[in-house]
Length: 125
Image 1 (cartoon, rainbow, N blue to C red):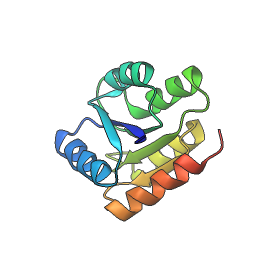
Image 2 (cartoon, helix red, strand yellow):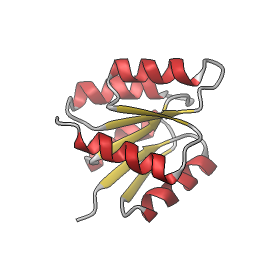
Image 3 (cartoon, helix red, strand yellow):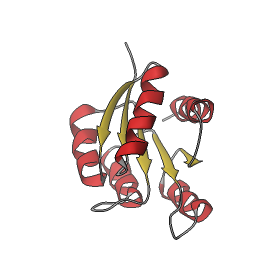
């Protein structure tokens, strides 16, 4: 049975690109365009892993990570970000402090994504 990954990213081009990478790596992909939709899909679908962007409208990734941790403390979460105005390192450090199992700065390639997913899924819950 394929593992399911919930991908949350507001940029449709980035989301489509990552969806293709994930499908090519053999995962079933569920996608959402922001944290609100991501939380609905998270609750309904119970994915094996969540990959969430940090800087998004409506409900951003840090809020989403906090809510997911409250709802399901053992959820596997990979935070991704290009940083925006704040800076990639700072945003991703904060995501890790708030509960992301692993963080990955954009842009990244398929091998980096595959390695990050492997690390997340091997984290004992």
